[in-house]
Image (cartoon, rainbow, N blue to C red):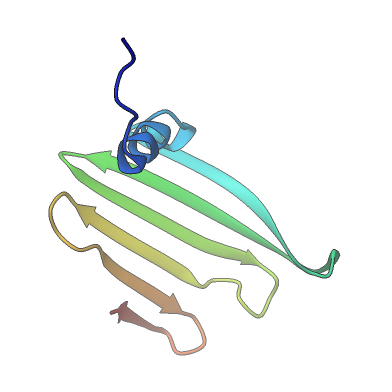
Length: 100
């Protein structure tokens, strides 16, 4: 007797639970290559941190380079059963804006 196939949402949830960032705290430095037609146009370096505590997941991303985006920061705060709150800091304006 075979088990019923898993729903896509269940599979995705299990995959997310079993990755590096499913730990209570994680940090990574990432190099993103933006390309078009197979040619690298630009490399962006970011630092990302994730903290999970008491059902709240906080995700933070900061652009390190190139210079035109360096210092840009993004924060997402997610609580179960609610919509994520997201904020962005743009250094050129020296202000934090809520992303709606």
